[in-house]
Length: 208
Image 1 (cartoon, rainbow, N blue to C red):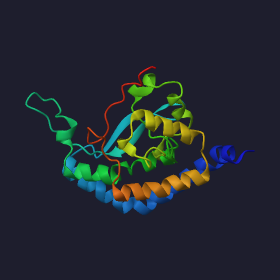
Image 2 (tube, one colour):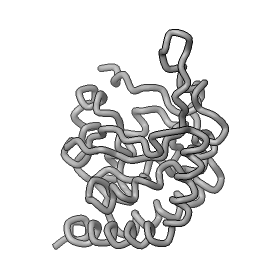
Image 3 (cartoon, rainbow, N blue to C red):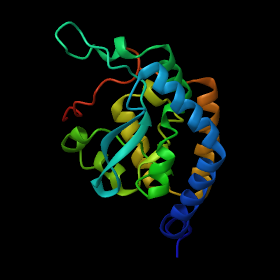
Image 4 (cartoon, rainbow, N blue to C red):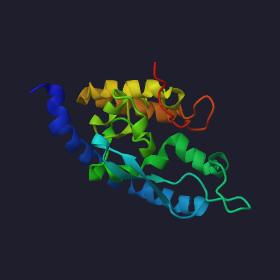
């Protein structure tokens, strides 16, 4: 059997399970401290969950530490995201600490350590046939696009890198992406796009 297929089919999930379990155990004090600070700074719920498409487009609940408050205007409507993102929330995002609860998604099998990032369910009908191939593997806590520009990339470039990863799922590639992720997080690269603190919504790729 081809090395790529063997790793993807028989090894990758086992490695993900073991690494996420060990990480949860080692990082449990950090998770507890972050949970307490999030509760103080943001209120409840401490963990934010949202439906995301996983492998083959199957919907699952992805977990993150919340990074925005519940502040509302005089009419009871939530303020814009930029106004609800306080300094601590911005710190969580810039360091990717808000994504640590995704370790439980990896443990459950919803996600992998490396793979295309799980995006919004509303994007599903907007993908081209090629872009939709990003769902042929489990979504990842980090991915090829995240270590090659993150939110500085256009949506089209991100999806191009996602599909490139799908076609090259190997242990060596995963290892490279993990090491590059550590570097990217430490340097806090690619957090914002040119016009937003995070990333603008995907509205579809214009047809040629």
